[in-house]
Length: 420
Ligand SMILES: [Cu+2]
Image (cartoon, rainbow, N blue to C red; front, top):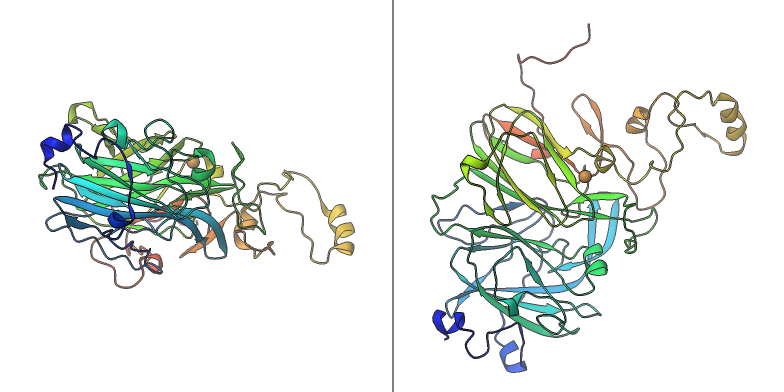
């Protein structure tokens, strides 16, 4: 075993990420693959209030030789974006994003990375203070991890907070294909920055044309699939809180665009970034936080009001799905002549959008294979008419039995807008 002192001095073999010999590989923790469906056993971390990753999971670890050990496997994955749409992505341990890595401030962490892609990769620990040789930048701090090889990273989790991991080798391709994950370093003193509910997700985006399953990785701006943890509404799971609870949401952005994330019904404070916690004296109340590419924003609030509260990106095209953005603007036109002509050629043809686009939310359009309508979802009062980066925060007075998705706030007796 190498002492912490020797490690910090860059002793023996630990000055940089290392390729592993066959003998060392025999001692690896077996890689755990993503659980099926929504099954999500929390990692065993006694005394720690662990983080819930939206539509995601946390990688189990083992303690060995004074270090918390994880085993990441970079590989192609088949991923459901939402029911009705599949994508062929790259990720880690069976899913994109990869599993969240949860650890405790001050711990030594050893992360094995096996490359099952057909091209070299690395892992960069975005925002984490690590020795330079562990920084995971291909060609700069290490040779890239060749296909089939396993490398070892090792560092002390020096700062509590929220970080991200992603490749720094063929970055454009590998991140456009979905390779990323969250890192949560819990404070050593569990009373520090304590909350009742703790959620995390990563913002990413894809350009997946209808009737295809592979993202167009050359796209710079014109994405059509705006995702949280590689999911779109109605495939993004809701968040839950009991009334009066303190809630934290950790939001990291590894897409190519900024995303103003807006919460209804509550005001929050930004309590942290991947640079550290924000001092209380430097916080101010907000209802929207813009998260730029490469940034992590941690927001906290008290869930004061029971209800179903929208949480979404405020760029309205980012809260929509793929199909429909190419529809020409027909607002205010009289398309009845064109309609009868076209109906003679295309039975059932209907011009879209002469009065607005709401009708798209309620009709069952015939779609090409493997894509999603621009607006989707059904609530207790009709079509929700959203997609993309949208979900709900469900605040209740008591725990919900059964699937949270099916539980709608009735607020019997409470004020509600009405027709007069
Ligand atoms: Cu957005």
